[in-house]
Image (cartoon, rainbow, N blue to C red; front, side):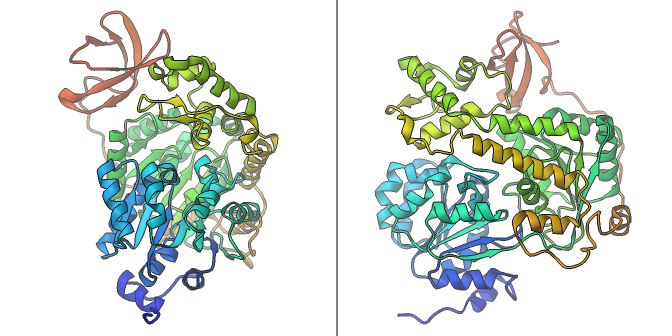
Length: 559
């Protein structure tokens, strides 16, 4: 048997770090000893090291379950630059390469293998999983397992079963946000045995935490524009509504302040371009929905603003944790406008389909029979009278049917079909339950109380919410304990304003109204490609259907 490897030596020689942070050493020691671990640490505080370092000390490999393909690729690239044998296996990689990587892992040539939870349902993975030399299992973003977590995902729900299938290896579950209830649920769902539980809160003194009440909707744009103008450096402004992002983008441009816009209506190519510009810039501001940020590892983000209250304190904590990872002063502020709570209430409704609704989706698919191959998600939403595109109930129901093995294929690949019947008693009891929806609404209420002017240190409020030890005395870095204007003025220089040159207009842009072939009128919701390869996604005014138009083959007139 080889001599044990000293973690401190590995930390210094392989990761170039002099010492461990906070709970890292205790967690790593427990992982090396073969103990199950649940650790919550703030975003950007080094959770990944808890499984990365043991992977270099143990015989065999660490299998890492992560929900984000983009994050996997970034981690794989960073580890391979350090000489660590890391691979990711996901749907973004072609089948031949996926097989090659899995076979390399079977041969013992891989230290860390990243997969999504969906990979456990892959026939190839099931064929090879018993041969994988798995020394430890790591579950990233572990709050996704819990029915009470703010970002519950059906595929995570089966990880306890999947863990048993690979021999129940010692497991480390990692998340930035977990209340005591969520932490208990994670341990139960993963079937962790006497786990070491290490829980930390936001204790980074460089983050200033603030909330500003707004009496009138018209106050928002000027305040956001003023804040952005006061602070130089990269920043993120989150909004729940795309139209608000676009209005702010126009207002900033009018004031000579440049910004990027990122949301789900952009094409994948446009989103990738925006993210790359932000990552490479020292000054860019990105205006985004909450789709932006997961997997964005940028150390010098100087501020994170929220134009509306997020749905939960967990979500807010995770998003502001993206600021100031370099240890320098960073500003984190949420604007509290009471009428915005109605927006989030709608999102709660749309995230909680009833059991009856789910069976309605199933019955609709069954009623289509062989016609299902010619249908798409829009057809299903139309059939179920879904009017608002933010209503996510149909997609959630489809995911449950997929996870349960009731459906195979997908609308995207045009091979969706029913694999078997759905039995009423096979749904988890919390799916469509009143308790789940009530808990989500209580989470929104907790966020409203936090943002609406609690007369308490922000860090004390967070510690109470997450069931952690309260910090002693005033923190000196929140709007309850010190003057935010003075704190900001002392640490930031104003952003340089640049005159905006008139921009040459593209032939077609998102938002344009057009007439196709002289008859069909609609609005461009997306522009894909460039030059001769440009394609327009047009939402028809007559039936609200989206169609992809090649302007080289169809006559398209801008109205």
